[in-house]
Image 1 (cartoon, protein in one colour):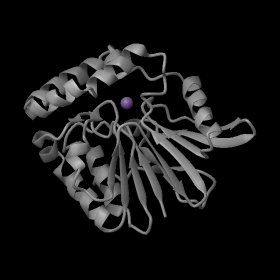
Image 2 (cartoon, rainbow, N blue to C red):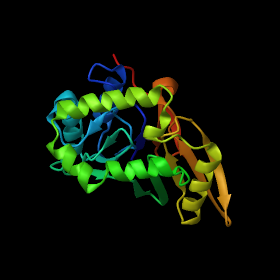
Image 3 (spheres, rainbow, N blue to C red):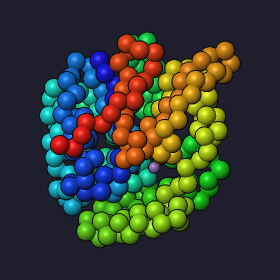
Image 4 (tube, rainbow, N blue to C red):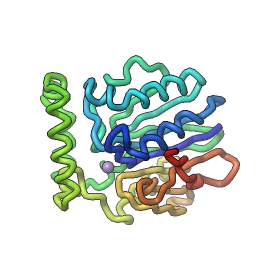
Amino acid sequence: MRLSVLSDLHIKGSEDPFYRSLLRVIGTASGEGDVIVLAGDIFDLFVGNKPVFIRRYSDFIWACQAALQRGVQIHYIEGNHDFLIRRAFRKMDGLFVHPQDVSLQMDQARFFIAHGDLVDRSDRSYLMLRKLFRSVAMKAFVRLAPGTVLDAVGRTSSRHSRSGRKKISGTPPKRSVFHAFACERIREGYDFVVLGHSHDADESSLAVDGRRGRYYNVGYPRVHGTYLVWTGAENGFRREPLPSAT
Ligand SMILES: [Mn+2]
């Protein structure tokens, strides 16, 4: 029994070395109650159910399919770079797409896992943009627009957000905002709160109303080179090195 949480790989294409790392993590999950949570921004761009993305990342689809057949469960939480993807994976039994977050229970431990782009409720412009990106109109646009157009628009806006105008993808909030969010979940009864998005490999033991829980942020695997693994053997998650791309 192994719970692996990955996020923020921001894979740029099928030749990206971190794409190979992702495939190896999925490829080595054994079944026997293994769960993989892909907690958003796995791909730098994957929008809708478009052949351009499905073809580019077909090895990912195959790796998931094979893992599901071995009895691995996969949860894909949408991020701010990969969303409206439910239809792309709709035929895959045992792979669940979540627009916001997922609650899991393993052994006696309760986990709340989300991408983290909804943590900062004061970032109104991002929250509105997020709503727009997931609106009925946007869904219709994504369904009708050629994948190549989405790909071009996405690449431009993603370059844009990296060059300082961070608003388009939500500015990651400060640690204190993540901690306050985690405390709320711990108050609700969760033991572990796992988030991403901020690229800050933070972790903290938090107490609220006599309950204690732990908060983890996946961090930025492209720099830190790790992901989170929980086996129940230790008291919490450990940061495991990503398998190398070779
Ligand atoms: Mn993000």
